[in-house]
Length: 363
Image (tube, rainbow, N blue to C red; front, side, top):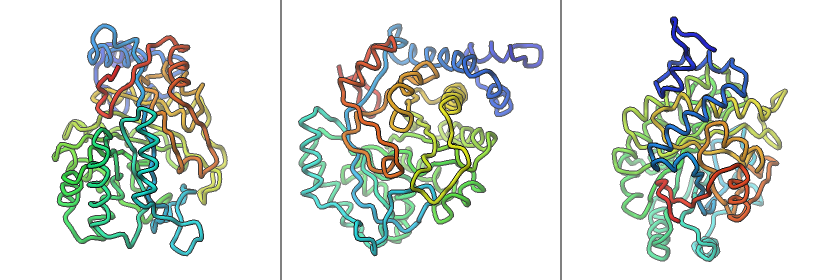
């Protein structure tokens, strides 16, 4: 049992109390099974509050589709195998007709959301994005547009020479419903300069979230780990996310995943293993006491580890994700349909329920 000034840190966690960064580092050193059990208890506390007495049994998922509207990008992140330049033969920008085909397939499958992100295209004009959002919202009003990560918004503000608040506000008026937490990586600038030197810094990422939350847009928070960061860096990242949530309150969920090194310029000696993924997710569940939902990352870990992650603090199985291009570009490809997700959730001892972006149950 971990001690804390004569009291038990374990008891503090089980009581649902806030822990410090120092506490987090102490918890990190626990055997992974013990840390997982504490995270599972914190998960139960959060979900019992959200869904009442039955919340502990519920594991949610969403039917959505990734749409990467362009793969052209001029920030050349070392961990990314997806981006292309305009000189590459396989660069693209999707047309409205191509996007409509994807949305028709999503609608036929009962989908309720698209995750729409792209590279930092240097030449697409502001009106292209507004027209695209208006088109989707008019033709598919039942689909939530969960789109454009914080680095994209900072890119837009710079490229279009517009205030960040104006860009986000105009996108919201055109039909944007929520913002994904992509581009967070590790919110420690020393780390960011090593893996993505041309991408926005930590404060800029958080600024997008602050403005979006002030404008009434919810978002997710993320962490990509297992590259050049330290454990202390991961905890600092979690601290910044928690502090931001205290300020603006707009994060609906937290998702973490491990760096996928295949086919990328960023090389590491030892890819992060399953135990480290589960340990980090469990620690995040305990530390992020003000974020209700934690999503397992079966897209990078595989379906069965995603299932195990439900015992390490996760209460959500993510997305059916009819299409995924970024992680698969790095060599990791897993696919699941709704029936397979529900079967995995049931086999883990939980009740599968579909949700929307705001974690409202749909069935």
